[in-house]
Length: 126
Image (tube, rainbow, N blue to C red):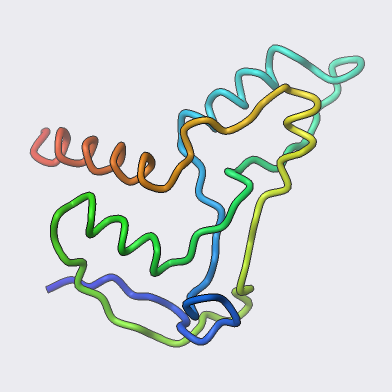
């Protein structure tokens, strides 16, 4: 049976797993549209960090998937991957200022629910 591999359970975080910034694809699309509609001076390209601006641990993601999906996620814990930092969060202030953008659909429960429903709809599609 396939199992989810959790890389690193000894990080200096609340539950020992890595913390990452998860953002809903609709929030990303909204930011991209805003960036295209508001080009920089003389059409210059601008760079933004996009994310929810808050962190969620790997174990929190797994627990949310189990709650939304109504079943346990088979998993195995493995060692850290080389170079993985304990916490990675997007610095979204610049996107907020210049694009007037804020993530509005990036709560973990909503992200997982949306992904779960999409997977259920498309699982048997040709």
